[in-house]
Length: 113
Length: 117
Image (cartoon, rainbow over all chains, first blue to last red; front, side, top):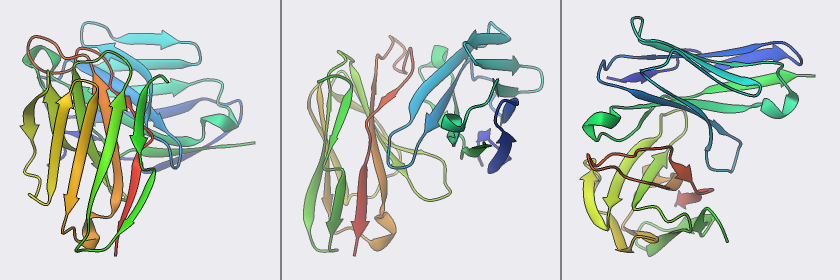
């Protein structure tokens, strides 16, 4: 049973518009969440994180929102650029319990020029 | 060099071969990880070493054997693999907290693409 779910395998967005990638989790002990971006033939690259004591974290064009009651987080990219086309992974951990990260299956984002 | 370096980037081996994947981190971290990425599946955690001790082994078959000689180096020894073991093998490092898990993000290498014939 997957503890971290990304129910959209793929997403296409027009350049300049907003991309919204979603992630749901089932383990209420998770207290730290990350988003990674992966290009083909490369390792995942860290994008942005959020602790469970916050509901929003922003870094440039990237914003992560956390809704603990819904066990849902989302990554917003605005404006989207063609270079953002990649696979995006959501990951979660119960950091205070010393647990390692659990990754979602990823969402492939295509930003169309 | 900086970051996490993996070699080789590509490896093709027969089912009877013995080979090794190597990972080196230059970030001063005290925990290192092996992950497996198969097509259309989430990243699967295989092994974790924290302070050079193996702290997690997620029911990985014995044909995969990790080795962590020091906090900067990690190996994955491969022996008698099956074609279904073909995948991208990713090494990562992080700083581990007192509770054992990572206190910050994982830093990944570029991966070793393994093909078993």
